[in-house]
Image 1: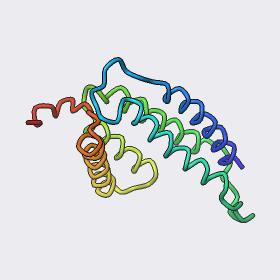
Image 2: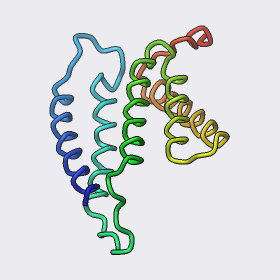
Image 3: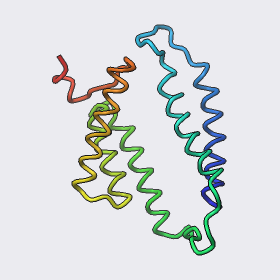
Image 4: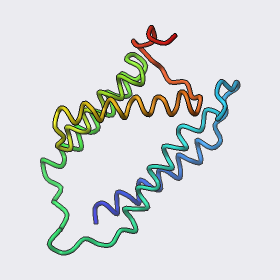
Length: 150
């Protein structure tokens, strides 16, 4: 039940944020898809996940949701810390390095091994960078890796 409440609230937040993002326009355009494409794509992905949580069949009685205990709260606070660190390091370290660190942290948070976490973090960060920077022409900060760009 907690996941459905969370999904409903998050879906409402996505709708509100999408309305705000839809009206966003920059005085100059430096990318072909415009500045609102990135937040709208992210909100769309989050909304799809929320809808999936809302329409999934209920879990069987023996698979009851775990109670909101200390371990769950600690995992939630760790996630919030990772998100804050990602936001603070995004410009300084750049998209790729900040995303690698965030990906490793999230994989470890959910029980991934170090090697698997490292590989998935690197692949995810580079793949997303290539998608947004090269395919969609959305410039992302390179941070300390800016010297590598030619």
